[in-house]
Length: 177
View 1 (cartoon, rainbow, N blue to C red):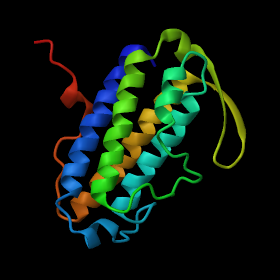
View 2 (view 1 turned 90 degrees about the vertical axis):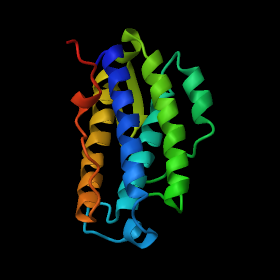
View 3 (view 1 turned 180 degrees about the vertical axis):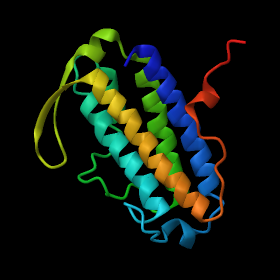
């Protein structure tokens, strides 16, 4: 992971979240909360999980030296105690939260340095296990986790009759021709 790849993935994250939430807004509230047999049950709870995991990781990232600005920004966000904790009760509330988190992710990606990517992040998992891993690969996991669950969300939307359209990362990479 490089600083420029972090920026690209943050842009992709924001672009895809906009598309997902626009698509989800076409469903009724009962459709959003309907248990569709997905890992997190409903589309709403899948979107919520992505926001929860992003928040947990941002709090972890904020503990690295030199990221006091991130720690300050994350002070306004809750500290979820589980990967299924509800952050909002409606799609409108969750979308506002998502937009705020995406703004932090975009800023973080734009400010992360090579030295920080090489630094070791020490944290505790939600299961209570101590970890020490380099930030670069953890950021790859972070962005991959978002993509993985957004894939689930797009499937749930498609099953509900809503086509999100193009979801490929290549769609936001500028053409050189």
